[in-house]
Amino acid sequence: MKKLLVAPFLFFATTSFSGELHNFAEVKSAVITGKQIHIATDFTKCTSSNKNGAYGMVGIYAPTELQALDTRIVTSFMHFTLNNPGFLDKPVYQFVKYTISDDNNLTLSFQVLDARNYSPLSEKKSYVCKLDDGVKIYD
Image 1: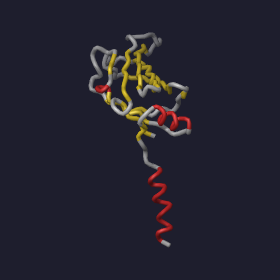
Image 2: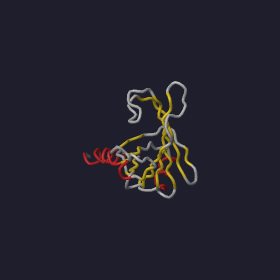
Image 3: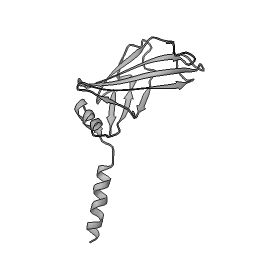
Image 4: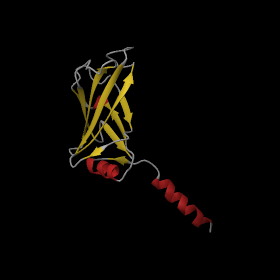
């Protein structure tokens, strides 16, 4: 009888932990079934249009809104900060867009905007990261 009581708890424990998603198909499957995903990016392992590199950053993002298309999954956000490395102590917005494509790459692009009028303060920069290398995605 004790074994019967333990079995349901073991099932719940094994199905409630995050799993790593290794490719576009797995990520898309998780998204279209309503699972929350988490994107962990090691920018030092990505190629960049930024001549200054990635500043040794690692970032984690859990998008709440995504668009899943045939060949890509897209999400974006904008946030206010005083800590942008190029504009320290200046109030700015950072607009960030994540695109996960069916070639198993994640492209992250961002642009810094003036907090007063949303005018661009920098050129758009981008990083391209390979799934399972520069970026890990979990559900």
